[in-house]
Length: 408
Image 1 (spheres, rainbow, N blue to C red):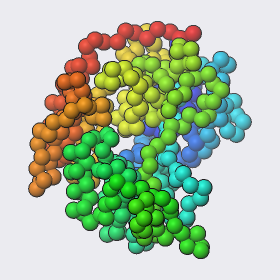
Image 2: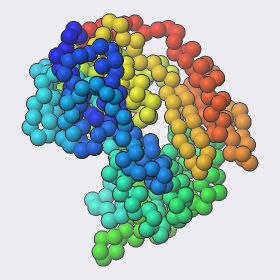
Image 3: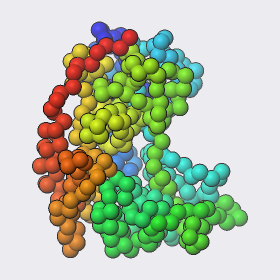
Image 4: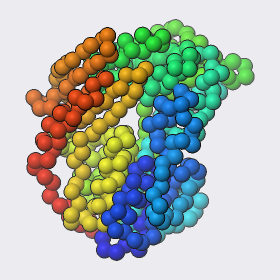
């Protein structure tokens, strides 16, 4: 792209802000418009289920700093309603049409809701700032919290509630927490952490129904094994869904997310990249070499930051874009235990427990596929990750991808 006059960034969260910053660092001096469906300026999501819920931070402390001189036209509090790739126009939900020379799509994902027709009052998800604020205000008054889903987010919510002294029931339909992304050894380690900190952990059982009283207030849940649990507050941690509905009719390929190539360019139904458009963050699916170039989707903080940077380079200078071949990374804190991972552990066909020390809550697990390292996870052993990250990085840097070809 040569000298674009206007770039529209659709999505005003972490990926959108980082894309805008990267565009300016790369020398883009034209008009930059940042569109966001929430009324809030960009904020950091990881602290929502950590410092905000346990009272350590005020909600406004999650606001991300905006560099001086970014020179952005903000369109906050209005969602995107459509994209016309041929006409180079973003349509907003209020009817506004934003013509663009280049566009960055970064609308992220939303929390998966309860599948039933209605939910009692007191049932929440935690994806956005308003969600976290509502739960943080309700937690000190709660007698018992019900958390449905024992993944990383559900685990962090449970840990924050226990730090406040709130009784917690944690429901997980699988046999162990985090079984799909990390495997059984980590699952057993995390299950022991929850129970050691007073959580009523129910495994291998789901929620058949959320129950309420005559005033429509939550009273608990009926489980699939017939048991009933009491709760006056609930958080659903059922995963996330990409915000791609607004792209219907755009001609872009959507398949459980926005399908992109290895240079962050959304693909059309004919398999070619759309012109003058890139994407970053939680809405994307793209080929990763660790997965044999199968499509992956990463809802991680580091992915939003790193993918946004490459997307900006591709948009401005496609012939010199490095392509996107990251070593994914992720972190979580549970009851003071610092859990960190690199790579893609869920791809493994074998795992190796390098260290396991229950007394000091230490764990090191490596993940392998076809005999090659694809990931590693540590608990209270963060310093060990650099070695594994370097090994994975070495694999990803050879061979290097070819420069991106221009779209038409």
